[in-house]
Length: 401
Ligand code: SAH
Picture 1 (cartoon, rainbow, N blue to C red):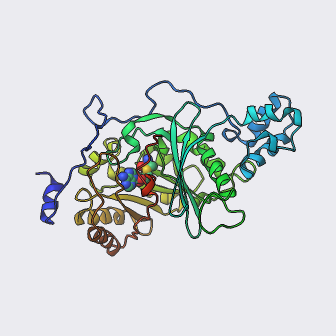
Picture 2 (picture 1 turned 180 degrees about the horizontal axis):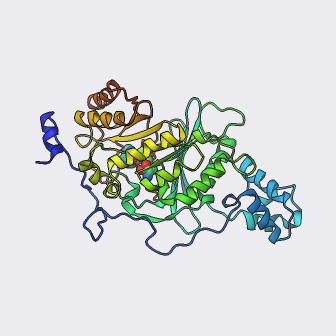
Picture 3 (picture 1 turned 180 degrees about the vertical axis):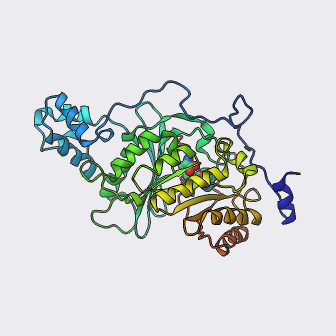
């Protein structure tokens, strides 16, 4: 009997194994769930867009078509502060060249295919088509004191986690820096037009970004980091957002986590752990075959040491799979062994995905799991999950028309 089975039995519980149910998990030549770090086919990236470039690079590009550097600033204001790419609205540009300039700087990146709303319009899921037909989603959420946008970083995902809908179709390609950023600009435009429900405030816009949409952000490291740098760059070079309002969430690509700690942009870091023992995590998070629980936790702790930012541990609670008392205790031990006050745990009841037979943990089990961590001195808060009614919650984004 496996260790986890005997421990579950000792608690009078079952141990459900995370084999994919209702769909076939892609397997590699080694007989393990396939991991994709690069796209299957040769892919092309979208045409270069203003948001791909720094302010200086924008000026250089405009120079190629005979325009002075100050135009770069004007165009950046239009895009990052007025959320417009429509040449007709750019009255500060020479009339006879407006259309040409817009063609060069603002190739169309995201075309809205569908918009679904719930929570009285305070949660909106957008389905976007990219230039090559790829589909991605982002989710906009109004809370009492902030507006959060959950964004995608890849078309599909290559990490193949059996409980997440995005992984089921594999990775199509990385999103470009500008495609990542355009999700925010489009959301800001919708907010400015009054399209987000709830109590409105003047000048409001997206203040919090979570990289918890489709894709594994650290598998698209360079483009994602470029996008992050542009989010925090002051207007009009970028969006002038605060780094602490940006959360980068990962399955645990250790070398990339170490690199992130050296970027000098103190974003909030979240590790999708979901199991404290390798026996279970090997099956739940296929990338655990490369980097084990302890290595991922060491890298997360290093992020805290280098940035001073408290790290988040994400833990989707799945009935009889990873919600046993002994796992809460083991997780607390592993976190406390590295220090105090450096981490908090964010359990989230599993959201259903197509074909999956697993369900969220029972409320009393969830409460006990949290209580065990809290009592061990690990701050733990149940994550509020939005958008389940529109398949817009964590793990549910699959982008189909
Ligand atoms: N690839 C990154 C970011 C995208 S997922 C990562 O895995 O962290 C964002 C969060 O949703 C992750 O913590 C992920 O594990 C979680 N998640 C995935 N499927 C889920 C599901 N069915 N229910 C609840 N959370 C889920």
